[in-house]
Amino acid sequence: MVNLAQSDGLLAVISGPSGVGKSTVLSRLFQFQDEFWFSVSVATRPARPSETEGSDYFFVDEKSFFAMEKKGELLEWAQVHGFYYGTPRRAIEEQLAGGKTVVVEVDVQGAQKIRQLVDLGEIPKEKAVFIFLIPPSVDILALRLRRRKTEDTETMNFRLRAALAELQVMEKYDYIVVNDRVDNAVEKIRAIIRAEKERVQLT
Ligand code: ADP
Ligand code: 5GP
Image (cartoon, rainbow, N blue to C red):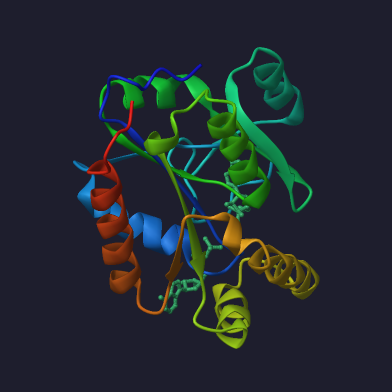
């Protein structure tokens, strides 16, 4: 049970198709560190050259990943693009209990698992908000993915197909934010979070 009833904590769950700009938008949101706490996931994929251990992900092997999972240390986890990704539970619980807005970036399966925790009453309904980032168009998504140059063509096509499938689930989220310009998307996310924190609690 994530004990949140008496705190001002809010769990902001952000998803979006590969290449939509999640990392870019979240790193810009990082400027407002006093407003948010960013969860760092564990991942079994290799680090990209630009990535830093403990800041982008905690990079672990599968054995360590499943040891954590077995001990109940992950709030949720999923297999994405052939690797495993999971959200460490304890740090999030501590930050939420301290009244922070915790931002977690997860794929659509991860968001669905967190939604189940809300449905089960483990996370109070008014303490979680689900935001889906979308590109202005599918062509622009393909362009961004191609421009990022972090994947070979085959992986990129695979990610693009997965991205198109992910776009189908956006109605399961509370808010859709179009990442047209990064600063617009950041402001929309901040506004959503500010409003959610003022939501009337019917407890
Ligand atoms: P994700 O984390 O969702 O996979 P990234 O943040 O890596 O996506 O962004 C993919 C590419 O798109 C990067 O090259 C990034 O610089 C670019 N990008 C992100 N947001 C925008 C935007 N609003 N306008 C133009 N390019 C963007
Ligand atoms: P990438 O390899 O591009 O960093 O991330 C691939 C996908 O994994 C993205 O959709 C991202 O949102 C998702 N992801 C990152 N961390 C987690 C996590 O802790 N849990 C889940 N379920 N997905 C994650």
